[in-house]
Image (cartoon, rainbow, N blue to C red):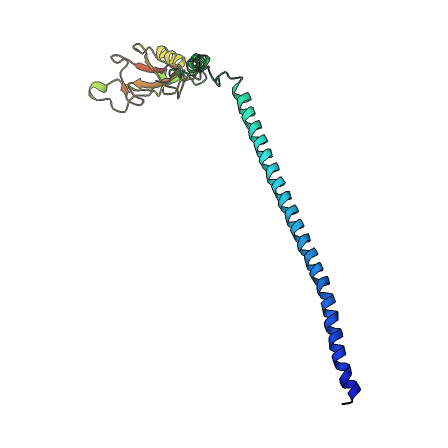
Length: 217
């Protein structure tokens, strides 16, 4: 290596060290600026967060206050939310009176009696008088049935036409028996004695008719 080149190397190293020394303050300054900026940003964010929390708390308190006012307004018209006066011992005497009246109004009534069902009879359901006048001879003519006829069927016929049939034949009948029932209706024959198709002796026997009242039991 030449002496010139050997002599230039120390100078270059000194220049490099001098340049590095001058750059160090610049780097430190930049780092300081960044640090200060970060701290300022952190403080700003903390301040914003505190204000938001304070605003939410105030809004909640405002909402709670309004709710309390709404409750007070809701109970005021009824008169049952009176606070009373602690000094005089008044606890709101109007409320019991309202409660007493209300209890009287809501007192249950006793069971109501239901109207009994009723059905009107069918006057068009009649029996021909020939069923009695020309009643056929009973099949059993021995003993006490001698001279008997076969009893006609009066069931589900209106009593007026049945009585006409009996009277037309000159037969005897007792007083009618009333029966409470709503299937056939008022005035309809629901039973008879003697029964239909049984032996009936016009000379000695009497007929009993059971007639519906049209009302249920």
